[in-house]
Image 1 (tube, rainbow, N blue to C red):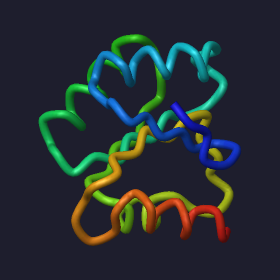
Image 2 (image 1 turned 90 degrees about the vertical axis):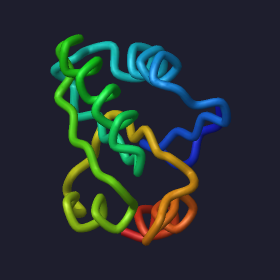
Image 3 (image 1 turned 180 degrees about the vertical axis):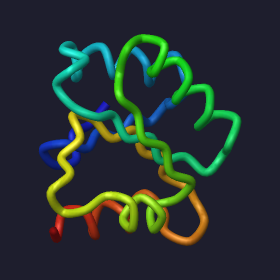
Length: 102
């Protein structure tokens, strides 16, 4: 697990269960902020969304980096971004560069 900036985390061995564990670790207080899930696989994105929502977190889901950039304004600072690395349109690396330049 590596930190990529103040609010972005990359996990090399992703997975829904691992993502929920990361959410617990970095967003202990559920009212603290929003968790953003950027994942092109709809089934995985919906599973993460459902699990995190059932745990009481506020969750935003996007299917690629460009969609997330369009949906998040520069004032939005989520407590955690769960980011898929390989996606169409704008991949994880491109999203990180765009997000960090805000």
